Length: 285
Image 1: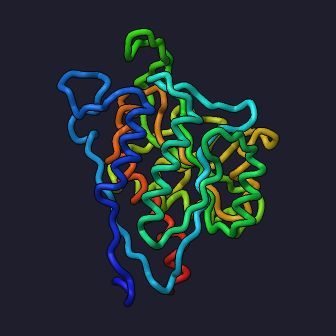
Image 2 (image 1 turned 180 degrees about the horizontal axis):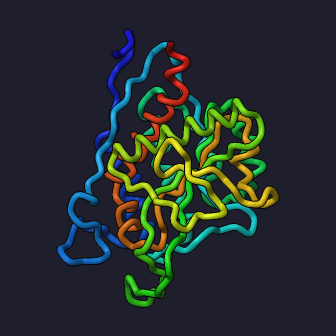
């Protein structure tokens, strides 16, 4: 039942300029469902939709630190199926998502990296803490599957694999038990909302030994690297932190879809809903 003072929110349409910027960055124009084209999602898998949530006035604004992955010293990230570096793709995505979240009027955003600046992960975690973030969301893309090469445009030679699509949400269950529980809560909330929006959860087939599948939600995994190799932002942030592998960067179908404004709309709506599910609900009760 909706609480008094709550109102329905859904991102529908988004910020067109930001979406066009993503399209230019990826270096192509994604088309919908060309019949028989292995580089386009078939039928129902191509449909994404913004999800709705109810923000409560009693909950107040939720403060989220958005970390566009990579762009750290000596760490540019992967190269996608369209030869785009992860650090550039995630900065464009982070900027677009931040704009959509701010537009709700119920989420305040601190973007932890901007163009032209190399920022350590330790500095990002400290900035989020000093700002008073309620949550830390790190945006990334993954590389999975048996790699081939292809040329998406004249003069380009890029990696390609259509073997392992889908998103994955990573969290740490080590350290303080209460904080670990809040990390898992946020990760599960976002996975549920992304699935509701139509995103495909990764099945984890290539994660054996490095991530453990969550018992409660598809597409969610706990970090199981050797202790000295575990993901810094997941274990050191003072607030609940998650890492979102938004898609498989070397899957041309996913890379094409993540270049579309509608995809950013759907993802941003899922993030907003998950923030309220995991943080706002407790505040507004």
